[in-house]
Length: 291
Image (cartoon, rainbow, N blue to C red):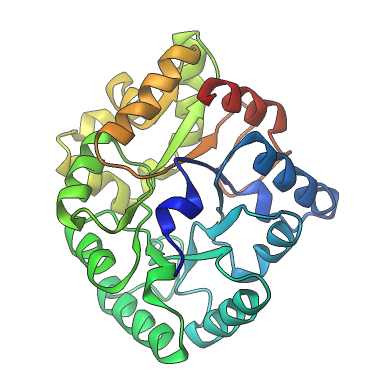
């Protein structure tokens, strides 16, 4: 039996670049995964609606790193296919892969409807195919999906959240399920340029109601969504600043109940849905912050 907390550790890297199919990056990805393992990160979360197949090269290039989809869209991948790929990968590399799944967003998935019911059906299909519930985590924001994470999966992987959301999620989940929120990091100590970088990346997400509704439940207002996000919102969903400030922000998520924090580097060149170069120098700096 794989202990999820032990297998993922306290810190991981969330990256859409590491699931890229760009030929220019494909050869570098296994090398980068091996370096992340050497730097001490316990897990890699593959963004950009990743599939099980994107995890295999990273698992094969490492010896203990957990590789997770963060997330696999239930509208993009059939449950039977995802289950078959999971079981094949598991047979060759037991305990190394974590299946993160989510219902995505209405603006991003043409089939999007009744996301909660669709997720229940998807979990039913995975269960029938023999995928252990304890090796699945859900991209859960709202209370119903968090409760489903508790009752039908090994835990939750909420994206674009705050320590306050983490505390609420822990209360709903109880003590046992894995809680692994994502947190964006800007390695810049200048408030103006750091927040400008953060806003440039956040703007797309502020057009997705799943996220804005989550922020409204946390006490933010529509005014916080204007012009790429208020200072209050940026400071709540990003870790930016010098090493001490960034470490303090990450620690706040652990203090609120997170078992693991999946850290996503955001730079001035970052753009959602358009992975660029692997930010390997920034990953090294982040490892120093966490040392």
